[in-house]
Image 1: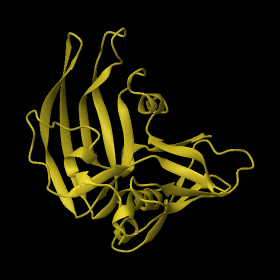
Image 2: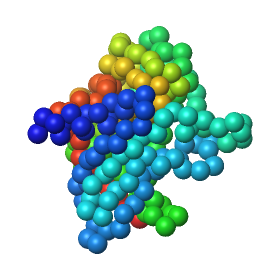
Image 3: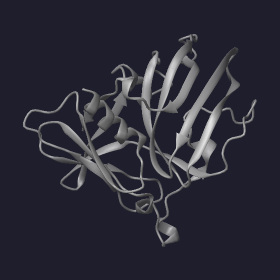
Length: 232
C-alpha cells in the first residue's frame, strides 16, 4: 500500500527532470471501453499534448512530458501564458494582494480523453463527485467542502507560501474570502489541490454559494483523489 501511494504521489508532484510514467484508476470506466489518449490542449497551441493513456481496463497511465513540449519556435503557435497569479483559480488581485511570484504560468484544462481523432470525454480529479457539477457551472451549482485538482504550467520553478483576503460583491451581498497558499512548483506541469474549507451561503435568487476559505497546495498522497470521467 505504501508503495502504491508513493507512486501516485510521484505522478501528482510531477517532477519533470525526465519523463516519468505513473498510474491511477478510473472510478467509472465504460463497459468494453477502448484504449484512449489523455491529452491537454493549451490555449494558443495548434495541437494537443499527450500526457498519457486510459487503458481498456480503466487504468490511467500518465506520461507527463518535459516542459519543452509546451514551447514552439513559431510565435503563432505558442502557448498563451500570463503572470502566475492569473493561473490560480483563487487569487486576491487588487485586494490585500500578496507578492505573487514573477513567472509566466497558465492553468490548462480540461484534462481530455481522445479517441480516433476526436474528443470523447473529460477527466475530473476530485475528492467528491458532487464537486463536478460546481466545476462545470459555478454560477448555478453550489460548491461543497472538498478538494478538486487542476494542472498548472509554470515556466520556472517557483514557491508561494502566504495567505491573502479579498471581498466580492453580489447585488447587495458581500462575500469575504481568504486563500492560503502552500505551493512549491517545478518548471513545467504541476497538479495542485484546491481544498474548499468554508462556504458563504448566498441568496439563491441572486447566485450560487461561494467558497470563502480555500487552501491551495501541492497534492498529498492522503488527499483521496477520485478520477471520474464524463463521456461525450
